[in-house]
Length: 162
Ligand code: CUA
Image 1 (cartoon, rainbow, N blue to C red):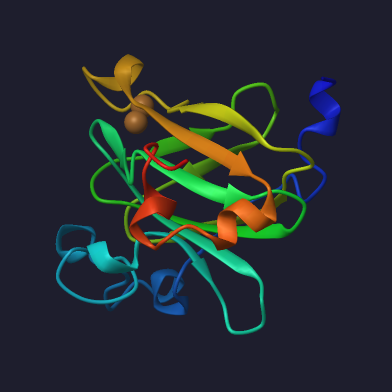
Image 2: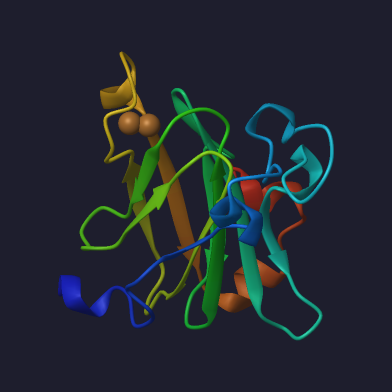
């Protein structure tokens, strides 16, 4: 498979910083309380289908893993990634591509990818983040849309999926 054919979609990522970040006051996304409330509570992580039929993956990067460690996404449709950090800067790098998303605490990094074909990708952290950096590695499993639709919510955030 040609590497250039793996991902059809956007290759750039953006970091959403709240406007008050630039004003030097207030508080953005609090990296220490992500699990307590808001978009990144555990039950909201993984791949979700939006009301308009698009897909969003929410993940947390932390020393030294991605949560969830594996996400399942459908092939052939745009998938929006929204990732934040619980501690220091990390990077979400999809192996075999030049695509990587830098993730920082206090902000949400976003990027949209369309995966051309089903496949599995290692997602190593590409930003030195401490002693366990070289072992920090997530996984991405791209499946045909019909197979994705048949998965339960918990199966969409686990490598155990069929
Ligand atoms: Cu996380 Cu390197």
